[in-house]
Image (cartoon, rainbow, N blue to C red; front, side):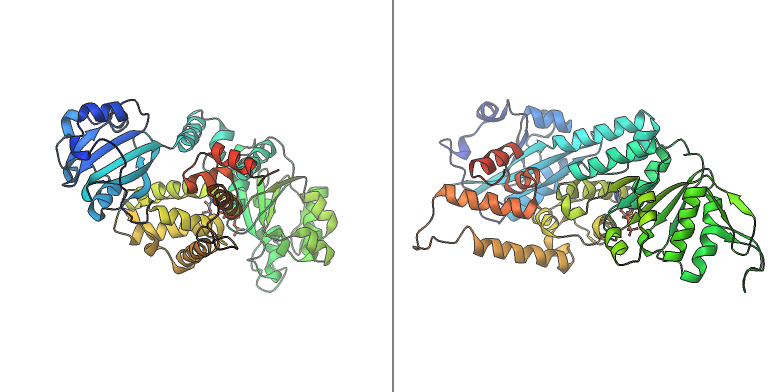
Length: 464
Ligand SMILES: Nc1ncnc2c1ncn2[C@@H]1O[C@H](COP(=O)(O)OP(=O)(O)OP(=O)(O)O)[C@@H](O)[C@H]1O
């Protein structure tokens, strides 16, 4: 599928003999929407599910050109190029997404039209319903966490711990690669906490020069050093009663760590050049992309501070550890950015989805978000294709694809013969699990349900 090969529909009934009655027998009971257009782009058939899902009637559009009636780029492109395609269409009013698979219809080697099947993505709907519901409930915890997109086990686990952390005043240490959403989680904890009406103050410890960090954190008295022309209130004082978010804590110089430790233990500090002890009641959330245990071993991070901070640890998984979230995040940002710039959300070509899944995303969600922003601005077509992607993503996919082709399916046995279908199936499932990690993602890529993938993986002893 999707490689431009023409599919011959093997059926006893010739395409030219099809009529509404036969179509209804074939497609009338299906939950999936079915649309058939002929080679001239005229609508031949819409099954009841299609009519219900898209709010169009058979009567209104049957026999009319899809160019005037159905704004569906996948079908239009499939028809234009006489190619099988797969992709998504998004239904903004219903807030749901359909996977569309088109097949070229051929009769006696003549192109006859396109058959398109629309399968509603349940996960997407449940996910959005859940988020919209929680938002409408105006429950502060749900509301605070509702903009954190992701259904994968890893991110759901992080959210679960963060929600619990929001109910306490305990110190939290968030770890994870850059761009994974540590800052988003820290802010959500604050917004869901009882201190939500008090300040949330963020300090990036890696971005402030060493000689300014102390005054930035604790403030200074007038004339306490050259350039201190007036008194300055530091971040701890600004955050009083609320939350201070110490981002990149692993980059904090060791002598500053002692001072932070004192604030945690004694809940007081002095401004630079001052004698007065200032009381402060601040919740600390720290984050790091570095391995603090390793820094402790190297003598670069204080063990006592580590234990003080690590009361509630939260690990935010990287995007490559939760590839099943990539498509939801992509559509989330496509809608969000689309609304901001007044452009309709686009559809991802199947190859783009696969390229996204095989890329490692070193910049994580930040990198994905920036890419979607760029694509929404520069791609004029409604479908985003492999050629629109930056080379680091498209090349990885093409390379992987070549490797897959040369490493597996077309390989013959040692004796030069073809293997059995089962042996090939096992190899494919094994390779896909290694590459995509979850049953869900493998299912999406191979066009199987996650249950089928799990059953096959067990059958071939590929999982414990
Ligand atoms: N789960 C998520 N859902 C939606 N957007 C997210 C999610 N996680 C992160 N983002 C977005 O990704 C970008 C990076 O997030 P954030 O700054 O919180 O990452 P970070 O881990 O704190 O990065 P750094 O370590 O570089 O400070 C932000 O634009 C944020 O809105």
